[in-house]
Length: 248
Image 1 (cartoon, helix red, strand yellow):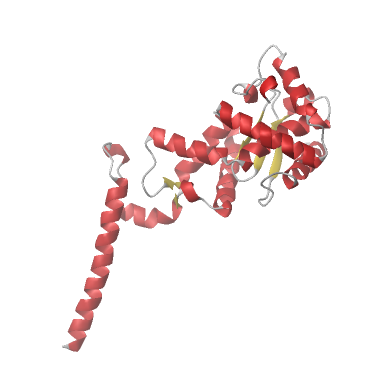
Image 2 (cartoon, rainbow, N blue to C red):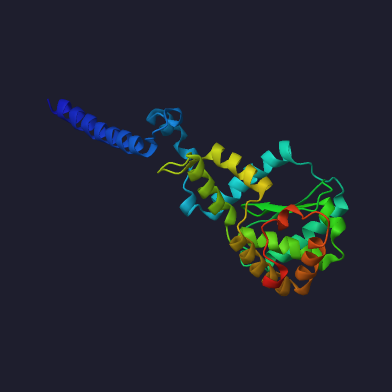
């Protein structure tokens, strides 16, 4: 008889746990759109892939950035193969990163084979500059100013904020967070589209200027390079939402 009560107590305890999980997950995934419904059974096995973007750790952000970078490199961009050029850009980038307001995460700087004048970044320390941008820069300080600006976006975690906003707008975010594979796809899209607000750009400039000074570069290089690019026939993508140079 005692074994029976022990079994019954054990059974009830786990039944309560299971019911609690079912109810909580049911609340989280409830949605008016049936096509987005996810069974609690699937979520139980996908739970480790759910990201809480509101309190994502540095380690999680770096790993997510790594996965976004893999997608970019594998199917969206072509990296420039010249080792000397890549080493040169990386040396500048690492010097700037060490003097940034967020120097406690690893950074990776890559050159994209693309004649357009462009630069972009994704979360977790990944920065990209195009061969077109390298040709447009008159000197190292001007190149450093763009890289410092992109580091400013990473330091401010702008990509995380944009991912949250995009997930909500697309209706793919739940109370538990965001599915990892969906987060990676959004991250790739954001990296290529660069939908930064003017406020984000201004903040990245402010932090970038501070990083330039601390790394030993002339802050005037940022304004000089922006003015040069603004005078070109077509506006570079990364300046499309940028404040006027007089506001920097």
